[in-house]
Length: 148
Image (cartoon, rainbow, N blue to C red; front, side, top):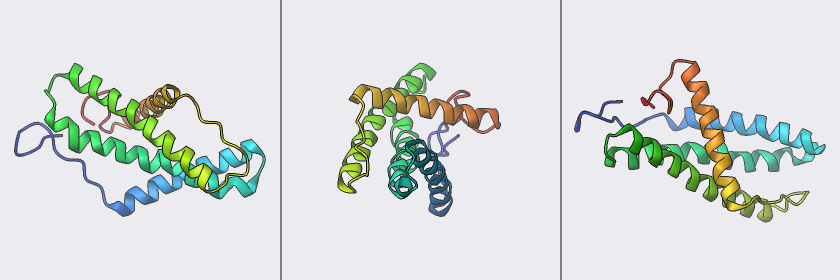
């Protein structure tokens, strides 16, 4: 993604509506699967709100890297990869804390165990790698080809 002012990166832009539709749909599906897994349909709305932390929050973490940090880093692929994985790790921890606080605030029907902070960071890296694999397989810019 070339940016006209420095010849390297172009900011990522997407209409908010498109982002909300995509991340909201993902959260609804994940919420439904989660509610079915715990055997309580009444948990679906809470699970959907919690899943929004990962779907919408994850999108915001990615934008933080793409538009905030990446243009300021050296263009070395190794530096870009290390920084992105670091942002994903820290972002995963922050999102997990947000999920835990939200679950506590909405009095989730079943106590939700918080993983260790580092597990949340590693899990989010795994989620992002899977999402970028899907993008790469569809021929879209991704982490794997260095274009996304």
